[in-house]
Structures are given as C-alpha cells and as structure tokens.
Length: 481
Ligand SMILES: *[C@@H]1O[C@H](CO)[C@@H](O)[C@H](O)[C@H]1NC(C)=O
Ligand SMILES: *[C@@H]1O[C@H](CO)[C@@H](O)[C@H](O)[C@H]1NC(C)=O
Ligand SMILES: *[C@@H]1O[C@H](CO)[C@@H](O)[C@H](O)[C@H]1NC(C)=O
Ligand SMILES: *[C@@H]1O[C@H](CO)[C@@H](O)[C@H](O)[C@H]1NC(C)=O
Ligand SMILES: *[C@@H]1O[C@H](CO)[C@@H](O)[C@H](O)[C@H]1NC(C)=O
Ligand SMILES: *[C@@H]1O[C@H](CO)[C@@H](O)[C@H](O)[C@H]1NC(C)=O
Ligand SMILES: *[C@@H]1O[C@H](CO)[C@@H](O)[C@H](O)[C@H]1NC(C)=O
Ligand SMILES: *[C@@H]1O[C@H](CO)[C@@H](O)[C@H](O)[C@H]1NC(C)=O
Picture 1 (cartoon, rainbow, N blue to C red):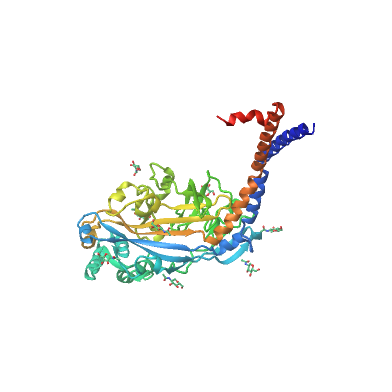
Picture 2: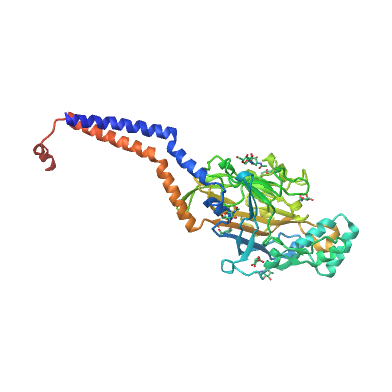
C-alpha cells in the first residue's frame, strides 16, 4: 500500500515538474530576469562598470600600418603596371579615453570628446619610423589634379617641379608620411594661396586631437540606444555628403553595443575617417577567450557598385561619377586630395583593381573588417577595422614631364588595421556573468529534466510492481554456459 502510494506520487511529481518546466520555458520568466538585470546594468551612469569601460576602455587598442613600397617607378611612368612590396606592421598603441564628459537631460544623454593618442610600439613593429617608403607624391598629385585645367598656371608649376626634381613618386619616411612633413611644392603654392597648410601627412594633426564633439545616448531610456551617437559636431543629420561637410552619423562609437544582440540585427558603426557609417551583419558564431560571440562583418553589398546595390549611389561623387565596386571617393573629406578608400588589397573590390597592381593578394581573414560581440552583454570581445588608403593616379597633359605615360589607376599607398581584443581580467569577469546567466536561463530546462527523470523512475517502479519477482536462484543459470 505504502509502496504504490510512493509510486503514484512519483508520477504526479513528474507531471507537475514537466508542466512547471514547460510553462516556465514558454513564459520566459527566467530569461527575462537575466535580460532585465543586464539591461539595467548596461547604462552610462557615473559609477557603473559599463560607464568605466566606456570612459576608458581597459583593453589596449593597436593601430598597425602597412605600406606599399614601389619597386619600379621608371617603368610605371613608361606605362607599366606598378609592382609593390608590402612593409610593416608599424604598430602604435592607441590611447582613447573619453574626456570633458558631461551628462545631459537627466542622464539620458552624455556629451564627450574622444581624443586619440598614438605611441609607437617598436617591439610590435617590423621596422622603424625612419624606414623610407617609395610611393605616390600625394601633395604633388593633388596640386596637379587641381591645376589640370589651367594650362598657364599648370605649365608654371610643372616647370618649378622639374627644376626642384619633384616627380609623381617620392621617398618619405614612415613617420613623416603618417604624422606630417613640410612639403616644398605646397610651400611654393602657398604664395598663391596664403591659407594653405604646407605640411602633409596621412595622420597629420591626428595625434592627441579629437574628431569633434559627440553626444551619446546613455541607454537609460532604451537599452538599445546604449552608447550610440546622437549628435556629432552638433548635427544629427543622416545625410551623406551634405555640402562640403562629411557628416554621417549613425551607430555606436566605442567598445560596446546594446546588450542582447540578435543574429538578424544590422549593427551600425560610426567611423569619422570613412566619412560615413558602416553596417555589419551576422556571419557566424565564434569563441574569444572561452566566451561565446557573434561575428559581424560588412556584407559585400556595402562595397558593391551601383548596378548591384542602387543604395550605393551615395558613393558616386560627384553625382553620377561611380568608381566601381569596393572603392569610396573621400576627396571631399581630404581637402580635395584624390584619396580613395577601399579594403586592404582591394578585398571585395572589382578584380580590375587587384590586377592593376602587382603585389595585391586579397584574403578574407586578413583583410576584412570584423567585430565579435558577446550577444548577452553587447560587449565587444574582438574587433579589427581594416582600411586602405589609395590615390587616383592619371596622366595629365599639362604635367607631361611629371606624369609621363602613367596608366590611370588606383594606387595603393597604405592600409591600416585598428584592432582590440578583450583583456584577460575583463574576460574573466564576463565569463562569470555569462555562466551565471546561462545557469539561470536554463533553470526551466533543469526542471523539465528532473520531470523526465522522475518519469523514468515512475515507469521503472510500475514495471517492477506488475512483473512477479524472480528469485536469484532462477537467474543463476543464465550467467553460466
Ligand atoms: C563621477 O563621480 C565622481 C565622484 O563622485 C566625480 O568626481 C566625477 O566628476 C563624476 N563624473 C561625471 C562625468 O559626472
Ligand atoms: C528631468 O526630470 C524632471 C523630473 O522628473 C522633469 O521635470 C524634467 O522635465 C526633466 N528634464 C528633461 C530635460 O528631460
Ligand atoms: C603623440 O603624442 C604623445 C603625447 O603627446 C607622444 O608621446 C607621442 O610620441 C606622439 N606620437 C607620435 C607618433 O608623434
Ligand atoms: C623601399 O624601396 C626603396 C627603393 O627600392 C628602398 O630604398 C627602401 O629601402 C625600401 N624601404 C624599405 C623599408 O625596405
Ligand atoms: C541609421 O540607423 C537606423 C537604425 O538605427 C537605420 O534604420 C538607418 O537606415 C541608418 N541610416 C543610415 C544612413 O545608415
Ligand atoms: C572624387 O570626388 C571629387 C570631388 O567630389 C571629384 O572632383 C573627383 O573627380 C572624384 N574622383 C573620381 C575618380 O571620381
Ligand atoms: C558592377 O559589378 C558587376 C559585377 O562585378 C559588373 O558586372 C558590372 O559591370 C559593374 N557595373 C558597373 C557600372 O561598374
Ligand atoms: C591586423 O591585420 C593584419 C593584416 O590583416 C595582420 O597581419 C595583423 O596580425 C592584425 N593585427 C592584429 C593585432 O590582429
């Protein structure tokens, strides 16, 4: 009697556990508990971990530059394809704390500037800042482009360039090419244009300076707005290329995205050096320091030409002037210099650009921009932003002595890889948060599992009760041949 009571209560418990477990799964109570806790913690508020990590991100950010050294300048001027050798990395540690932080509008927004400082890391570099790079003379190319339709002024400048031995190509040290050097030609042109800056460098005036005033959402109103850019330089305009300003504001700047990231989401990232925002979509699951992550990459449509992706008409500047897949004319943002951005080695660009330069070897894993995000917390575990700076080179009649018979081509000068990986301390802390969240989220499944276990026990007990018990003596022979 007591025995069968035990058996039946096991059965009842089994059913109760199953019902409770399944209804907890369906109502997502435990999932919501975890999500709500994370949502409430991820807000930019003085004193929170999220604020500390946003204000001064703990993991080191490295900016690595790779240069293309031209090996055959004389042949290129005679009409041959350029052949280049990749040099680098030249690595800089990037310090990027938020500064002048002020909370606005009851803590729903926060205003800040984000100055970046670069310090050379010799032991992470192959070569020194004194290495000479032979590449296109960008100030000269810019001046020639500007003067190409003025025969008289052009001839005068061409003569001056010949006298000073200034040609289409030049050799400049890595340090000068990045951080700026006095350019003789620009000094000469300054006599006609007194406002001209006679220094030139790809990262000239970028060390220790900020790229304008930002206003971010703190995420206190909507967790999905966490740390995303509300205003840049006082503007919220989403227009691409308004007048001569390069303002494109969208997305997040910094080390975090909103928590609880969905695989079907499009992530917007703001990049002032691209003069626009980029977007990325889910590619695959990855692991970073034992933490689960979603990898987001810019889809190939981002780089496609207008025929394939009509939305990219914004790349065609001036209007109707399209360069082809994978290239972005950023001339307007670079004081009129004929600068064209692409992925390193023209990854995802038209095959034509790869074939035009000997030495280009595009490779997905080395040349794509990718960002690995922990989906639960939105914390960036690893990221690499990769961009190439190119110059449009072409034959210009007035400057016959300088440009010779050069082909019209997009000449690669340098590419960069700005990367970050979560530091071990933060990874350890995050691992605890993720593990705890996983346990709590899985409580309903543990209850269902217990229900199933009880079900099995119940059935075993039922069978035992029904079948008559056999004596050990009867079983004995089975064990013997
Ligand atoms: C945050 O709080 C600390 C100490 O209470 C204070 O010194 C600091 O100015 C505050 N920061 C901001 C941005 O309000
Ligand atoms: C800030 O909060 C107070 C009280 O909740 C409210 O009266 C005020 O309008 C809010 N100000 C802004 C700028 O939202
Ligand atoms: C950038 O500025 C910092 C501090 O002023 C300095 O230590 C560093 O050497 C500079 N980096 C370059 C590349 O000039
Ligand atoms: C780049 O090429 C030039 C010309 O061949 C050479 O003098 C220079 O040493 C090269 N630079 C490096 C860093 O190898
Ligand atoms: C800006 O972001 C929103 C979503 O946050 C998106 O709908 C919109 O298309 C984006 N605009 C541009 C120009 O990328
Ligand atoms: C790039 O844009 C500038 C300014 O909008 C324009 O003058 C130039 O022709 C463009 N270059 C190409 C190759 O389309
Ligand atoms: C766009 O790209 C496709 C495929 O790469 C190519 O077939 C097409 O000719 C291109 N269109 C233009 C206008 O460049
Ligand atoms: C950055 O990218 C380059 C080339 O794609 C690669 O060689 C380098 O290891 C990367 N750096 C880091 C820190 O991941």
